[in-house]
Amino acid sequence: MGNMKNKIAFIKEVFGRYYKEEYIPRGIPRIDKREFGFNLFEGFMLRHKKFNNYDELKEFLMNKTPMDAYYSCAYYENPEAEMDKKGWIGADLIFDIDADHIPTQCDKVHDEWTCNNCKFTGKGITPEKCPLCNGEKFTVITWPCEKCLNAARNETIKLMEFLEEDFGFSGSEIRMFFSGHRGYHIQVENKTVQELNAFERKEIVDYITGLGFEVVKPNEYIRVGWEKRAINGLCEFLTQADVEGLVKVGLKRNIAEKIVQNKDKLIKKIKSGEWKGIQGIGPRTLTKMLKHVIRLKSSKIDTVVTTDTHRLIRLPESLNSKTGFKKTELKPNEIDDFDPFSKAVIFTNETITVHVYDAPRFRIKNKEFGPYKNKKVELPIPAAMLILCKGKGEISE
Image (cartoon, rainbow, N blue to C red; front, top):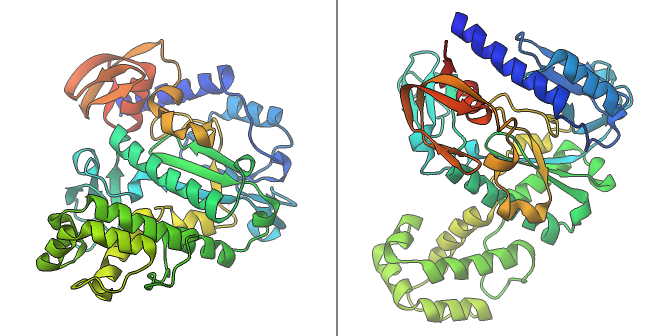
């Protein structure tokens, strides 16, 4: 218990120093119309807070040192009131992309879950129900590795394509953030979308995820939006496809072999719109391939976040208690080169000794650490914070 108290006290101390010494509040339009909420180290949450300006917000963060800080995507007449009395004005359009919702090979290595009922443990993405007892509540430990963050980045890039090319939002209306954990937040600040209700936002979600998109019929496509995306995606898929890849999509092996043998001819016909006359490759085969392409080209967003017009989202530049990293804003055109393990870390020149239970190999800035197994090691603050926040170690006595 003593080591646990020491660990929490150390994390809170680092957070407190950050909010006093480095944190600069910014990026919250109409701050006086937002509700703020805070998870505290003492074990409870404060909600329905209002701040008139950035100075009030910074003073609160310095005095309270929250574990996590949030503000509403919504604008209210009375942010401090109970929910039914706040007076909803509108809400920004929010998207959350998290590696937790993206299947990757690496999650089988570093992510684990434990059923709260029977204590059965597994690796990878957490199931909806425990395979042993059908329990639905789990304790989950994830890890932000470079592979899963790259997967989240790729989904974010796809989302940006939808927002700019299909919906016509300009770069000045779109704000992008690294979440401080395993993903990215996209925020559209546009007067028209602020007025959308939950059902209208659900239509945007359905479009971006490809839900309900009817598979393109021969000679009946227009090269815009999803139609363009599906046709181009199908051609890209066929260019790289081999027999085994096509079988995994659900095609019979003899059909897959025929497609591979005639792929150049098939791609040429698809690009020209002449889908008829491809012997042995009928509508059902094309439909299976197109459905696969739609899954590849859709963006894996958290659908609940986008449709919630009262959602609390993480405060820009605040620290994430799951990692000790900060939620960091970046320009959309910077995402290809953005490095969370360099740009979102704090106090990189200080060290502390930590007893690490078990941690995979990881990187902070240009230095590699681990893997560690039951080892005492001196680490820079960002590496130590990641270990401690993930419950993978304790402060060494």
